[in-house]
Amino acid sequence: RAVVEASAGDVPRSIMQSLVALAEALDDPLQRQCLRALCEVALRRPAIVAASNGVRTIINAIVEPRLASEQPALVAALSYLLDGPDTRQYVRTNDVGVILAPLCSTYRGKDALSDEELAVWRASVRAIVLMSRTWAGLIGMASGPVGLKVLASALSLPIGVLHHELLDALFLDRKSVV
Image 1 (cartoon, rainbow, N blue to C red):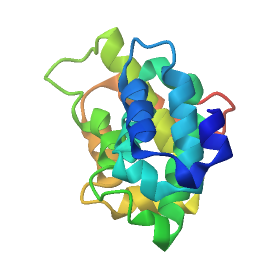
Image 2: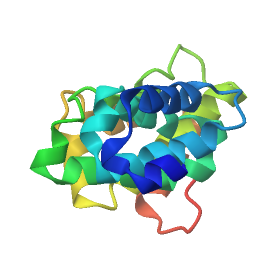
Image 3: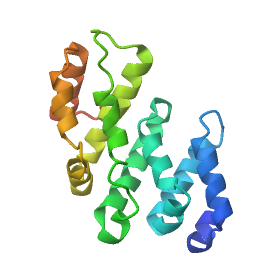
Image 4: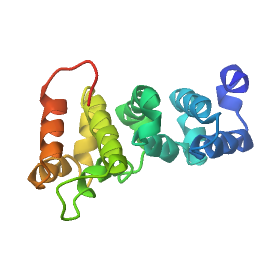
């Protein structure tokens, strides 16, 4: 982290790739610190993070239920990248779809979800709510090929708990989302 803070512009590609690899390792004790460092570098020098596939790592971590405490920082970094035309180029069009994907992949003809599916679904809803609190996040979600249509599609699925929690998360102003 000291290397990142001291010289965000001069971080060698090998160090960035190491940060990305550790941030992707779910069982690594340094994962959270590496994700935080990726977010910091993404704010200062997004080109270096994008060249190491770090933006995709940040987006994938947003819907990871075990990283719920890191989610606000991850979403803030993504919203920052979506905000400016010079940084928006580092977020691929389909990347935001990763956040929305759990909403459209939950239905398999049954009314109940497993605990793991529900945890991923809740992480996705939390991320959508956090992103919708910024113009950049809202427009980023709406501009993709799937975009906010997924929310309407999720409401059409015959799973009652999804309807209830999705509507509560979107329309009730609560401090702890889902």
